[in-house]
Length: 123
Image (cartoon, rainbow, N blue to C red; front, side, top):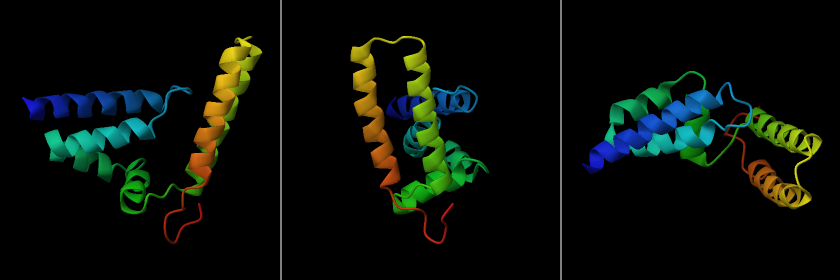
């Protein structure tokens, strides 16, 4: 039963991560990290497929191996955070929400930008 729950979580997070590729405000990498974590517990085959993926595999392997994030991924993530904030500001989101998001997005960006780059790569 536990194996099935992990497997279900892995497939759900994989699907959400895949949707995140085309949806601007939905992150991809965190869902794929959870999918790999749950996949190893429920379906090692699924976890291996995600880790071998041409687009996401190198980023996820770098995180697992070194807790490192490639420079281009940091800048894309920070750019999307800024674009999300500006979009919400332009549509007139309440100041309380914008204040919270300013703090939250700043914290996320700080976390991302202070992670190491993968060994031997600057981009």
